[in-house]
Length: 137
Image (cartoon, rainbow, N blue to C red; front, side, top):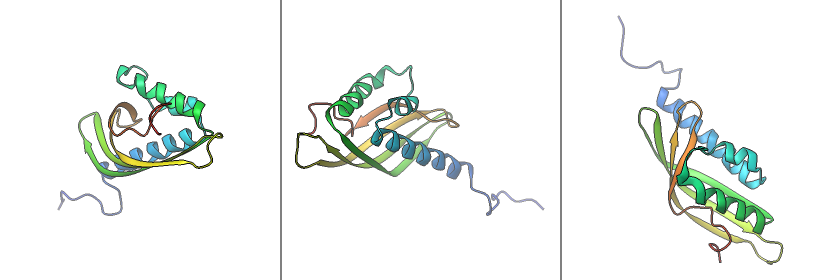
């Protein structure tokens, strides 16, 4: 006799996908904090013109702030055939050498991704954590 239920010892395909997204967000945060342009831009879809301002603001953040921290918490994941979106809460810290105190902010954002096996960010909507030179003060 066979059953429709998945094996309780193995994660479901959805759980695996959410795990890949969580891993990608950790990589993204680590690259942002270590100011690793190559790694952070590798997580972005190179062909997405919707990310041009995001790329620019990330580079501005790297120039203006000597220390950055950024963490994400997934609130919701919506998976379609080969694309998905994540509704996230984020918390960040930005510190410029010229300022005595860091700037701390938090917000909500939606990240749109393509490629289930190797997620690439294609669009950012909402309260983006990437502020550029003008956005934090």
